[in-house]
Image (cartoon, rainbow, N blue to C red; front, side):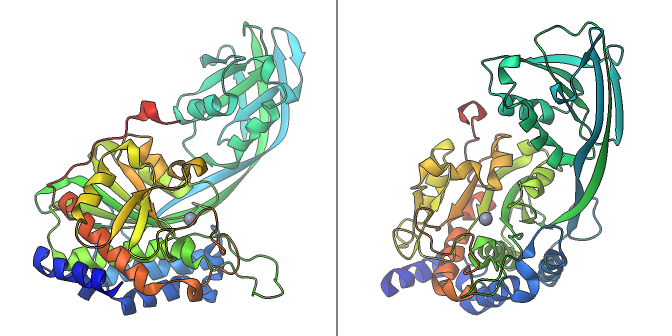
Length: 427
Ligand SMILES: [Zn+2]
C-alpha cells in the first residue's frame, strides 16, 4: 500500500506545481469535515428538519472560509426552493355528458382548485395500452405543458398509483388532467380541490469562476441529506448519521473546492454543490439542473459513499455509467502509474447510474457520473443507524479525493472534454 501511495504523492509533486493536493487534501482536514457532518447534532440531516439546516449552515460556512463565489443571482450559498405535496379533497367530472367516477380522474396541479373543460385549450395526449404508464406520465409531467391525458383502460389497475406525482410538485408545474377512458374527449368538465402543503429545502452551491473558459462548467457534487432519526436500536442510538451516505461525498466536494481555490489553475468555472433531498426523490439535483444550461456543463463528478474500501481494496473506486461517455477513460488515463484505479461500476444490475444525483444532468446529455466505493452487494452499514464515522477508512478516503483531483486536472484546465451522454441510450 505504502509504495503506491508514494508514487501518487511523487506524481503530484511534479504534475501540479501550483498547489500539491496532498498538502491541501489532508487526512486531518477530511476527518474534521466528515466528523462535523456526521455528528449526532445534525440529527441524520433529514430533508425538512432543523438537522439539515444545521448541516447547510456548516457547508455554507466552509464555502465562505474557502472564498467561493455565490451562484449568479443569489446573495448566499443556499439555493432555496420548495416542493409542494398535494392531498385530493374532491373531484367531480362529466365526460361526454355522462358523469365520470372520481377515481377515473387524476389531477396534478400546484393550485388549491382547478376547473378544466373542453374550452380550456389543453393539448390532448394519449397513453396507449402498450405504453409504460409511469414513464410516460413522468415524461408528460416534465414537459412543462398543460395537458389532458387520455389513459387507455388497460392501465385501470395502476391508474390510482399516478398519485405519486402529487408527492413532489414544483410551483411552476403545469396542470395535468389524467382521465382513464378510451373515448375521445368531445365535451367534458372537471372540478378539482386539494390541500397543498409546502416543504422548503435548499442546495448549498459555491462557484469558482474559470480564468479563460468561464462559460464552461465542471460540477463537483455530493448529497448532504440523509434519513434522519429512526427507532431506537438495542445496540445503536436512533440517529442515522449517514457518515458514508453521503457525508463522505459532501466532504470530498468541500475538500476539492478548497484544493482548487488554492491551486488557481481552473480555466473552466467550477461549481460545487451539496444537494438536498436525494434520499427522498432527488429534488435537489432536479432543481439545480434547471438553473443552468446543460450544454454549458462539460462534466459532473458526483461523489457518493467513498468512506469504505471498494471490492478491489484500497486505492480504487468505481464510476457509474462508465460506458455512457469517455469520461471514465479520461480519468483512468490521468491516473496511470499512480497505483490508484478507477473501474467501471461492478454492480450493473443495481442501475446505480440512475439512482443518484448525476442522473438528472445525464438525462440532459451531460457527462455526469457518480464515483463511489460502496460494496452495494454487501456494505454492512448501508442505510443503517450504524453508518458512523468509526466505520470509515479516512486515509483511503483522503487518497480517493486526491485521486479525483488528479484525474480531473485536464477537464478542470479545459484541455480535456468528455463525450456527451447519448440520451437515446438511457433507459
Ligand atoms: Zn446516497
